[in-house]
Length: 176
Image 1 (cartoon, rainbow, N blue to C red):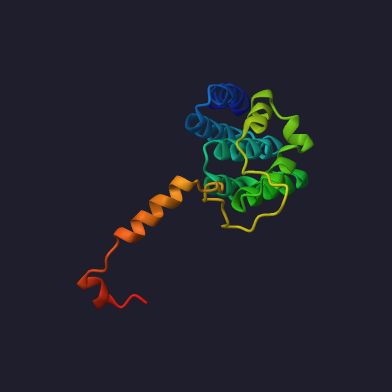
Image 2: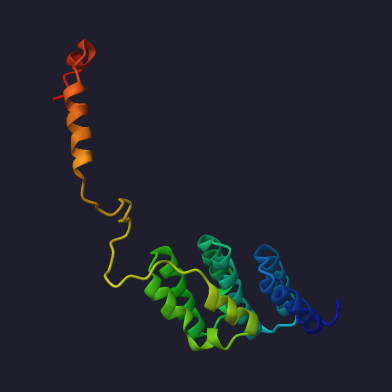
């Protein structure tokens, strides 16, 4: 396969897709990178562009949006205009945790028409939460839902207040 890079790329493509199918994303990442190298040797630039999309999807499936962005910066020059726009939108969506934008990017026609394993990966990719209303970045719902207190809870609080005493050390702190 040294003098036949296209044939080597085809064999490597099978390895890549099999690793994606088995959800072995670390191995899939390495296999896709080797496949890109074979396509570079054969000067098959459109294939490198498609593999860049696949590599970004696999990196996102690994839960590593930084590696996805790095892969796009490294190989994005081989992508066509529509692929570039979609990948930029997808990476931005994961950076900003915007599920709606991520779903819009993943519903792109060329992603749906990729190799079967990559199209399945795109459909199963865990995206940030979608919201019906726009949330500000960094604002999360960390508090449990409100439940009204029962009479027993109020009695317990009252007992706790009556049992409380101020010690000498607390007065020295001057907390108020």
